[in-house]
Image (cartoon, rainbow, N blue to C red):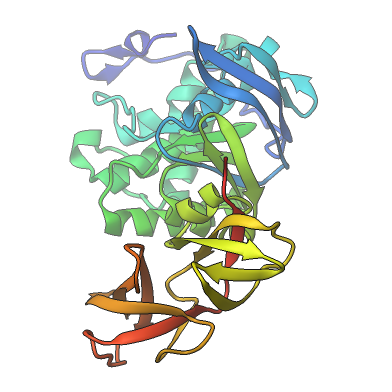
Length: 374
């Protein structure tokens, strides 16, 4: 039913009473099985498979064009895969219409009806249900007021979207998505239109809401900080494929590919050579173990805060300090490898002093080696 059916001018049309509020199982498992999606001749997803546990909060993280929004739209029923299956608690979701899937959707743009009050926006999904499943008006109002309290907007039920801040509008959008007791809650860049301070506040708020309600939740983001802070598990995507799935700690501390290491957090990558279990920088042996990395060209990855410094230490990486700047609670050093044009960055505590024109050496405390591709 279209919103125009419910509105005459600025006043909602009175609807007859229906039945009681429904109660849905809100902890469903979601399974994606070898899903392929192409747009014409352009592939968007390459055989993606993913299992999401009931009640889990999962982030789909990746750069633009990685396929994360396409996957979310397939879960919502807004797109149909070229091949593959999507299951909700073992039921083939591809055979269900969007209303039958009963998913809650929250978009970056809020998508609120500007001529409806906050309370009317929240109750909209229940008002437009078929007569057999439409709750009584008093039950819809009660649920909308309960959700208004849950999203910490009590007292604003008579306001219109234009009278709210961006953060308040997004809270209303969340409440509207929750009103229908969704089997799965799907969020597409929900904080993308908000400034940094409001984003941080709403991230904490969303985690609290999830812990209270227990919905199976999937959200799309390109913001790695957002994904690592919020999610139970992070799905890192690139070019229509899943690169790695794991907890935030697993993704950050044990990235399984050069892409994940370079995409998650800050890092430096340095071309080296592995030979006989040792790591070589040109003709200089480094005091680093190669582990099971095969002999041949490789890339040494490490993070700015996982590096110790010395002065011309044997087995370390010789560098020349090119610059020093404040970087949050640390000092960020820009370094050039002696005799090469490769640049790396390291962090020192903000109170430490270093001769910015000096020659020093650095040694990663934690690092990963990946064989060079090709």
